[in-house]
Image (cartoon, rainbow, N blue to C red; front, side, top):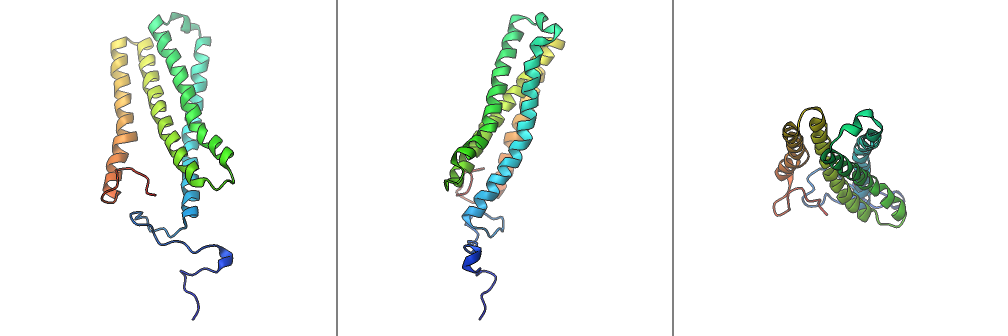
Length: 187
């Protein structure tokens, strides 16, 4: 009797584990394969956010060298400086998973790298959302007035909250197994 598709020769590595309870994605992969896939997916997401964050940060760093910068009032300058710091923090948080991976590379800590990288990316997105909201506020404050700036910043903040937090949470609730926290990463 020849081995079926569920039995791989030892030379090819361990057989894929049966689908873990609650994964529901139909994949038959080992825990290592799953961590590798999760890491790869996280890196793809980080590539998108890192590029945008770095461009935004670079733009913010050039603002003081523009002629109109001297026309900003003290509140606007304060908001600008807070935005520069937040942009730097967002950049650091979104690049940190790569640094973490470099430090723990080949130490059989992929699960730790993936879970911590995920946390860093989530906090990085939160800070990036603050930067985007704050930039909108500052732009409208400079071009129009403070009242309009609060409305525009609030609108952008609400859209980001909706798209980056509420919609994914609602969609995750539809796919999470009973008893698991919505959006929690299955172990």
